[in-house]
Length: 234
Ligand SMILES: NC(=O)c1ccc[n+]([C@@H]2O[C@H](COP(=O)([O-])OP(=O)(O)OC[C@H]3O[C@@H](n4cnc5c(N)ncnc54)[C@H](OP(=O)(O)O)[C@@H]3O)[C@@H](O)[C@H]2O)c1
Image (cartoon, rainbow, N blue to C red; front, side):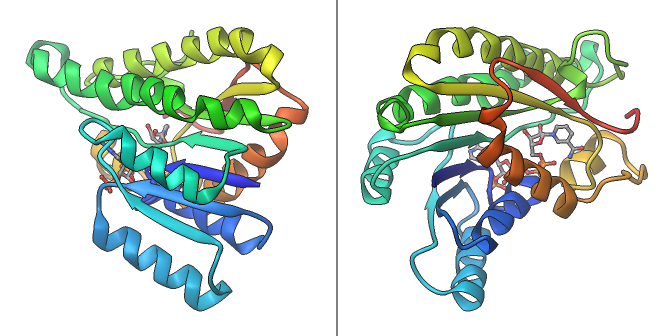
């Protein structure tokens, strides 16, 4: 499969990309802002697995020329799976959140996903059975425990979950499944920002393996689903 992973420079996106690469069954495009980290990922994959498996694209989802992504997709030669993994967590109580914080949170967690899907749609609709995986959060899962400081993040992830259901309906005649994985705590830099000192029961590597499996196989079993992937609170 041809697979695009956003937010691949670190954390869950990095480990998902590495897991997918190690199957040697896919061609990957890994996107993020940090050139140094993406270059290191590309070098690791090349050294371990050889050429032709992974291309990287330094691309700020909130401020990039879409033509650069379109050009990378043409080079990839199609797309079967999009993993919208990049995310931004701002940890501030509601009365300290600025309009700019709210804008940034919704920009990365929702509008960037919308923009990316708009760009890749012609490629996904040309694939035989495509899959969009939106990486949501238990914070945005209806009825879950909520935490002080996470309103801008959780509200944006809730909107992403709803978008998932809407797009599954819109895209069903094009054989594009759309699902949302609402993740619980995973040990990454983002978790440390949200819950300093807390030790998550799941490592980034473990979650990366699960997301990689789901991205390639989940469309056979799920469409339009918001799936809680969590064994703890937070
Ligand atoms: N860790 C958890 O406990 C947890 C729980 C629930 C949900 N999640 C979700 O899982 C996903 C991955 O989280 P994580 O914990 O791995 O986070 P992380 O370690 O903070 O990594 C975030 C990734 O998103 C990328 N990113 C952020 N803003 C971007 C932008 N404007 N353009 C392009 N890339 C951007 C970062 O790239 P650069 O560093 O290169 O900018 C980085 O690769 C997120 O959607 C997060 O909300 C995580």
